[in-house]
Image 1 (spheres, helix red, strand yellow):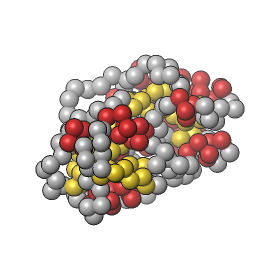
Image 2 (cartoon, rainbow, N blue to C red):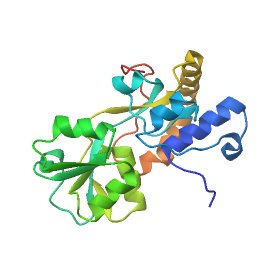
Image 3 (tube, one colour):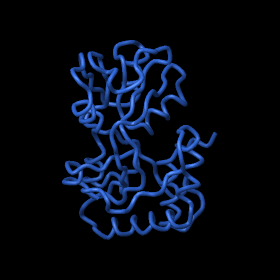
Length: 227
């Protein structure tokens, strides 16, 4: 056990730390801070953290407060249910159901845009609270980015992911807006890992283990409004 966070986003952060410093051991190069959907912009604005790499969907509203480099990956809203649930397999099955998602997340808009007449929408401050609501039966389903839900299912056999993503959520690297050179620097880094194949190797070792379908290609930098 290393005590380090692992996964696709964590890997992007590790590669970036090596790019910045030229060192090999991310645990000695960076200080990790845990953010939530409610604290990310504030932590960047007040310089508590320099960079946020945390399934951070690029939206115009967020881009009014902070800068985004990227996108470096495109996910989408998906559905998590209890492992014994056989009644929900797609977004159409969420009609009349109680749905959980994180407050201040893109899951809220995904529900508003794609779910017809939900019974209730429960908002929680963090991912763990949403998982608990589903596993305890207080919510029928949890809607959020597929990448996060897949990670939940790997760690917790009480929940599973069903169906296919029904939105497109491009992920960006969050930065303070006061230093435009930082965005250019991170975009240069992303270009290099796209071209070197390091991005693909990281995807295959993390997200690619749990999703079906073909191998993705990196998204075009600046292709999303707000990036």
